[in-house]
Image (cartoon, one colour):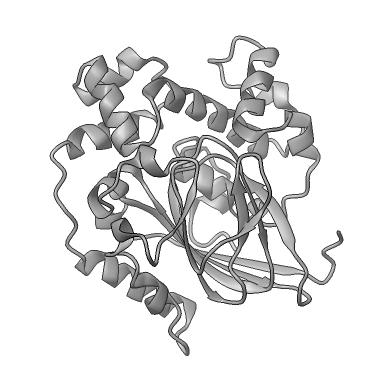
Length: 300
């Protein structure tokens, strides 16, 4: 499929400091293309994400293997350990990610119960407090900056539940972004809990056991370096925690469902616009590691 008549605009809005431990940045995607044309891409594993379609048809998507299926105007993907394949037609979509601490505070559900799946946010009882975001985002006659401010005001005004283990959740959330943390024992030390408690905490609030989370971060750091190096050399991009290239290829297939060479050869019309910032938000990159042009402001 050619995309000569396709325009993809992405606006990125950084949230204020009180919201940053709980949510990733806010995005607005505007896809302009001929009616009925489908723009497809593949997204790496990530934290839970809400997507609000305010114009045009909602996405079609699939987590892992399987057929792409139509989703809903307010679609939530739980935390993932597999690639999300998706397709968009001419539409406008707001996207907002939930950090593990945000899922704990705002959504009364076990992260493991929605891991590697998608649900309808408008009707699922766990997302009742966030369901009004669809109507807010869909209001007509409001510019993107003003709409981002309205979404942020709603989130700030909402009174989420207090989570007793929030300190440990935030500690693990931060530790997963630290390349020096390579073992479950180190995660335990950062969180100040034992192994069994860490296992329960990670499944409850992060969606997966701690060993898988550490492997996922190692993979995402390698993907981040490959992206920054212009997608030219996987060997140059491997995280130092990999034993060898074969080890990396095995895990790439596990997380993405394809070989690294297949991923590199694929077009990424949507992901190319957002991948660097997304990898920063998931602790695979630091803002200070980015080229100056990418450190500040919108990435559109």
